[in-house]
Amino acid sequence: MTFISYVQNFEYETLLSLNLRQINYIIFPDWTKPEDELGLELQQVIQALANHPESEKITLLINTGNIYAEEATMFLSGIAMNLLMEEDLDISEGLQLSLVRNLASIEWDVLLGYISAKISLKYEDKKVLSELSGDQILSGKIDNLSSQIDVVLQEKKPIINQLDKNFITYNIKEIPLRLPHDHALPLYQARFRLYDKFIALIAKHLPNSQDFIVDIGANVGDTTALLLQYCLNPIICIEADKEFFSLMKLNLLDYNERITFVNSFVSKNTSNQVELVKNNGTAKAVETENKFIESHSLESIMIKLDIGKCILLKTDTDGFDFEILLSSLSKIKEDTPILYWENEILSITDIELAKDLLNKLADMNYTKYMVIDNFGNPLIYEGSSHFVEQINEYMLNNIYSQNITFHYTDIAAFPDKYSHLILPIASEYNNFIRSSKIYP
Image 1 (cartoon, rainbow, N blue to C red):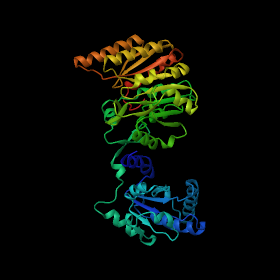
Image 2: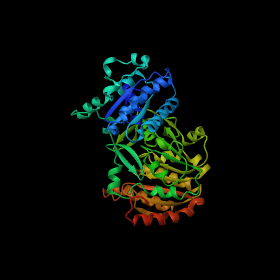
Image 3: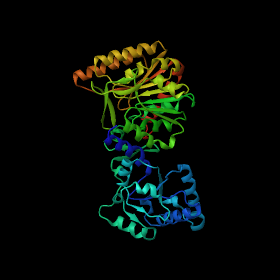
């Protein structure tokens, strides 16, 4: 990993989780000191910051040194309880407290660029501080914090969380996600109300909540965020791009009990000569001769995770979906899940791959296909594989005639055992289309 990519990964994985704000203080407690003495000093710092009228703009970073985060959390919970009981001060209403583990030198270099000042303590971790360059960080004292905060707030160019400049917050129903500024999802859903909503109703009508959903090409977690709100099934999120993967983990941090995260490209090969090229919030795998990306088959991923059956398999990888599904046929045959894929037809090769896939699915009793255009409009609810082939020919012909009515389709393939779900899904989706609701 290059230095630049290391720093970028650190920013995605760590800095975002620290909830940095306009003013960011840091302290380095010496956790070996007596609890009562150290606790009193930390309580003074937290009380001073929490009492400031602009406390909602302040984050206090607390270095955990060599103790476990759980121990530091318990210690700070006791302080919070003391402030609530003794001072009637609820620190959860404004001030943000974030724990910082011991970092590598280059990680400290990045983090300290976001810090307003270090608050000096009587009991400080001298070892950690000795490893930091003295000119990297300003120091302040507990007794003049209020005036320091006022100065920072009055500056024409206050220290602002640079990470927030790189992202926007966009809600998937009730779940807020951080998206890169160039991510196309908000624009598409603003223009096309139905865009990427159909899969929610498939999840809603799943016959059980124990079997797994697999989301291949999970991006920043937008589809999973939607699925989480329509079913109770556990979900496996697979994303190849490291930056999107890190952002997805942060976006879905509150749902770790239901989600398993996998950073991998899915293929029958152990490595692929492809490069992930990002544009408008997606990462497209482009074939190349001089770059390789580590890959794993879906079957090997599922075996390694040692989990149960898959009930819904979704893949959206901008052009590699046929290869992914064809390389996953053994797992598909074993579990016969509902399949949901982005059906992009750009060449004769795509036509042939689609036919190969449909023929193999027919041998596994996949007989019904729901077909949705890229805007979210249903083309057919109970189509056959022959209908899908005709639609594919239509899309390819549109490219040659340069009269494109829709660019791709999303296809849901149902094995016979789940075909009874099609009518209720179709009925509810029609009701959603004919309403003014934003979500089904």
